[in-house]
Image (cartoon, rainbow over all chains, first blue to last red; front, side, top):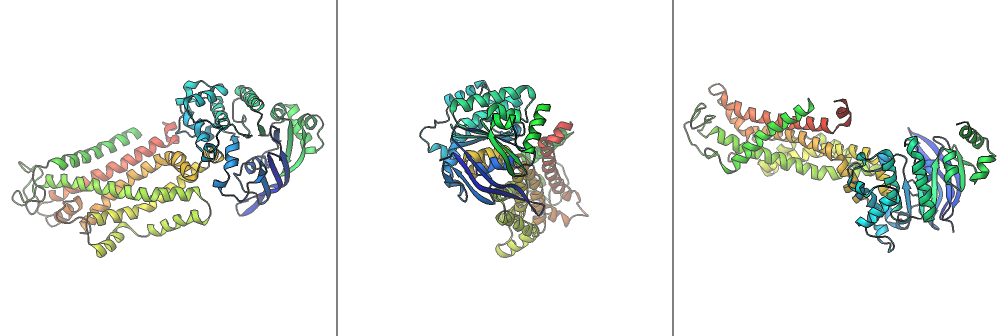
Length: 257
Length: 269
């Protein structure tokens, strides 16, 4: 049984009275502990794919399964097992942290979810748990009482990563986690993600338009163009020997940089 | 400049609050009793003079401030308590269930407070409560529409999706994430609505649809002064000035708060 399965999934948006197809006929399986990169240009459907995996979007066709159970058509109160075992790191830490909450309340939030509180292996959101979460992402415990605007961009994204890991998930979806950060802190945040994912043995879905980032963190890569998976395989193979012209263009673009 | 607006608003409101607070425990004379000869000009012991029956104008003005603030607080709080949750719910959902409260608010907008008060007064009789309920009901749509629009904006932020991914229930998302982030704009709306409520209550009292003769409101004082407009025009000045000060105070406070909370204006300064 795969951790995540997408079976013949399609996604359609309605924009300005017209249907816009974001994904079509996607077949995908992600195993526990696997690190999968999803690459493609802007508007290719990679973020839609990530949001579908977490039940944030409803597919227009097909089925999405998490740990063998379909998440489609279920009301939110019956998705407890998904909410307790999957997390997400967003692209923009300015937007993903509530500006009116202190860091301690932001980071502890996943532990307040009814789904997570039903799990016996998850601790109460006390000071020691928060301190360990902060230490895990290289943040000083004194920052717990700060508001997001009192932190640097890199610190904010580290805090977002701490929040996503505090409930010890089985799946972490990271949507362009470093693209909004300064070049100087990108490597630090990527190293942090890589270390945490490896140590915890959790599955990672890394959405990026940057093949170099995916090559550094992932075992397998999926290339999406216009909502279709045009190529997938082990990172080394796809990056060194691409078979689809779109992948070739992406690799060329990466090398020319 | 924007701090000046805020401070001026707070000062004017402060005058009304002090007048009402002192009026709660002490007035120079009993505001409902005849304590002097009619139409005395300002002097001693009646600092602002007496009205057409001989009641002390300052005492009635102080008593009116109390009613004015009570009407403002009750009607705006009532409208916010009903309108804000409906607006947030509407902003957090999609489809016809989201549109329904907005359309109902549009219909309610068509009924001005005055018309509602006349209907209510016809049904249960004119009183302070009639005025408060009418003003409150007429103010609800403003809160529904504002809370809905502000919630839409907040819902587009990543922290809402982060909460959804974590499995935080919708009610908790509304209380923990949406409400604190829309509170500043609601505060501005409350302040502006407060000014409108005071003006509406004065208007309703002026028309005899608000408080009874035993409660000396500013609107009622203005109506009574109308009969002596040519022999004692100063009688109309005091309640008119009080209404203007209170209304202007809350409007300026609303403007000041809006400027203070608007990040674009803050960056321009």
